Amino acid sequence: MVRASSWVAFLCAAACSSQPSQMTDPGWMAAISDATSLADLSIPGTHESAAFYEPVPGTAKTQTLTLAEQFAAGIRYVDIRCRHLDDAFQIYHGPVSELLAFDDVIGFAHDFLAAHPSETILMSIKEESAPSGDTRTFEATFDAYVAKDPGLWRLDATIPTLGVARGKIQLVRRFDATTTPTGLDAAKWADDATFTLSSPNATLRVQDQYTVSDATAKFAAIIALLDEAQAAAPATLYLDYTSGYQSHSGLPNIPSVSDTINVELDAYLADPAHVHAHLGVLAMDMVAESRITAVFSTN
Image (cartoon, rainbow, N blue to C red):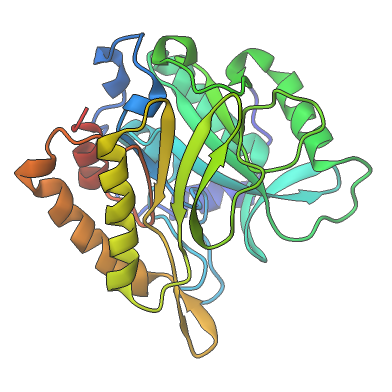
């Protein structure tokens, strides 16, 4: 696949990593049975997976590892936010351009899966910010991207087994669609809440409480969903967002949450009681390779 990379996207990708990937385990799914449902796995993920740039420190950047580094380190759930501009997708975090095109995101996923066909990537796609200059719907533009490489995508609305999903991107759809199935249906994602999305095809249980006044309360919400995931309702995919922000002087401050939560999360994952816990998907800010390994090692 040829990526529509610009020099600015290349420079962003190069500059956004604070450390080189150590290739922790780019093929960790290879040892897992084909018959295993993705709902039964502990899957390391990232929130705002391509948010590497911010005009004001602490306000928009959520990751230090590039997408390529994330995949190589073991990330298998990515959260991609697309602004619809001139019938194409550009990556945004709220109103902030992340200087990256959706073609680049797909290209990184394609290249990784081509090199590691035992793996799968869950990709959440959400429309971000205000559209401009478009002659078609967000859905139609997404379909145009899929048409470039339809074999790369799994668009079924059911939670697949790993054998079915290997080598593909499984869509988690956070936008409305008139033609279905178009991936796991998460279009009715609730704002700043813990909630359940149920359809005849799949059940998603989500914690995404991102406005944080008290990091202790946020961590309690994370643990509450982790406890539910360990009880493991059959065929339910758990998506636990450890991310959030606090408002400081009227601006969002992301590190004020991630710096605290990640320390608590590392301690939780290091506890022998959780060595073989079912965690579901953990969508994390400022992810570190050691934390990624700790998550997928529980499988």
